[in-house]
Image (cartoon, rainbow, N blue to C red; front, side, top):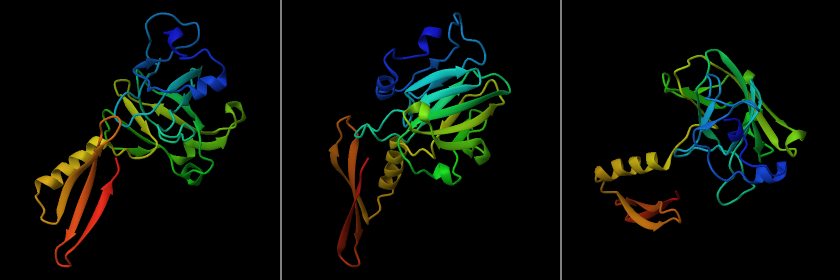
Length: 221
């Protein structure tokens, strides 16, 4: 609803610094609108593994400012984004501005572009570089902004956008499980410790039996 679109009434500085949690089915509607969301009132979500989007501001029907959450261990480091958009309107054209990047140098300045996929097209594709712009913006504390234009072409689809190809903790654990089931005589998997949020840290031991040497590779997760 209209009163849902802004998560903080603090100053702009406090609001940007206060992006702490991922959006969960967050409906963005025009200022002053009341009632049920209509088609074209976008619903943003990042409450999934590797998701990152902390705030969305409605600028116009065609433009939205997006704020990404900072790194857990370094609040000044803001790069990764991964989120979904649904409740789109056929042929709806939008501009998304990722407004609080922390890096001055980025591959986006060298031609890289964000990834997109949708429910009916599950393979990641690059957004055309001609639709992507990376620049310093005085309206957002001189942060670097990455803007990209996109046109939604299927109303029933949920669209997902990401900084680059996501590689999740669950996917890594699945890959390690497959290797372990193969019972390779030159590889051993051991528990090193648990993180604060109970994620597992493993040590992989690769053994060269011919040279009778052992190399430890630590997979930091």
